[in-house]
Image (cartoon, rainbow, N blue to C red; front, side, top):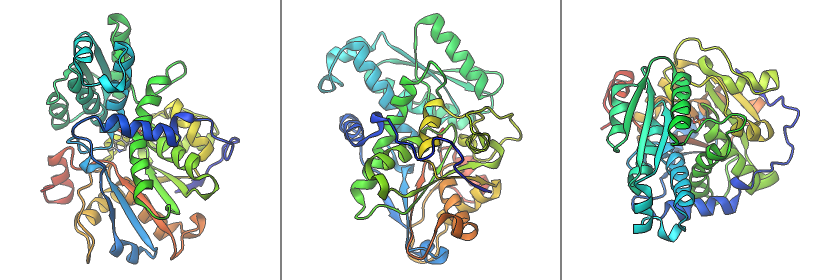
Length: 380
Ligand SMILES: Cc1ncc(COP(=O)(O)O)c(C=O)c1O
């Protein structure tokens, strides 16, 4: 199902300097100080484009982001680095220096996660020599928990849902004076989630630097909306009236942005069945993200469970000259949305043979066993 943006503020100017061109350049300069930083590939899929009747499909392949296999590597890490610089009162030049290391030993960064965000926070803390404490709910797979612990984080397991783990980490941060690094935001807590979103600008910055002409359509998968808002907001600020159409894609089983758009306000939806796109399983939009998306998102699209798995397969076993891509269940969701758009919503989205589509493979096989069970072969 596809819905246009129904917000009263749709098309209103976006006041979000933290997502503009200079902000993105600063993010890349800061992350560039990390020895492992490299731009990720922008992969053309000419055969897929031909079969879907468009001029071009490109995939920004975040499965190669640092060693974390997900774009999330950018956000939590960026927020930890920026917060640590403020706490230690050091400049970017001293980020990996002795003064920061000494101060970081006393810092504790904590977060709740479904998997990828916790890994990113743990990685940033480890880089500086700070402590990370990551709260997971019992639905987070053992493979994903082990991947977070591999970055030196202490793991606290909470009974219940993701929301219960958020409540637990908030209470412990207040009690212990730890720094909460959440990718979700709510009234009174927007600055840190904005730093997380700002980290995602590196992707948009790299894409625009690599392309001769901007895309005509961008498909962005969403959980709480941070990724989508960062990319969509940046494109709107940088490209102005020449910006692409922005389509936000969510699992039909966890469509908090879609429902918020329908009702004309940010709202929490009741959980139903779990979705295979587990990193997108979110029942309330982030406030910071919603404030951007209600202005710049053009459409909201629902994805069925099997569409995500079919997209994983199409990327893993391509036809013709297309390179194979390893995309996890949530990673493939943007491509699933692009396929649905080309097959079912061409007129509504103005898709023609001239269209240039951009999608983000937001994660690789961050849970290799699950990947194997879904597509019948391992990521290797
Ligand atoms: C792989 C992947 N894709 C997409 C998303 C959605 O990002 P957001 O919650 O910022 O909308 C997430 C969130 O964790 C994710 O891990």
